[in-house]
Image (cartoon, rainbow, N blue to C red):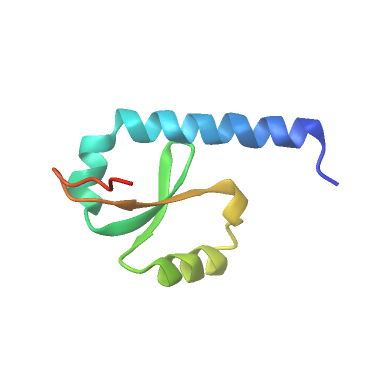
Length: 82
């Protein structure tokens, strides 16, 4: 069972990750356009052009999926509109 402390820790980590990604959006787009990235707090721990490939890389590095945010990086000027 997950404790309240563990949930709080994960939410704080996710918040830090989202803030870091927003602050570094332009740099991320320049370097990782059209790729998936896995971010943990203030670090891109893995990247690849395919979603399944990035999952395999994370598994090989023994990085739990719950510790990273995986996102596709659209090229500059492009956004997903839902």
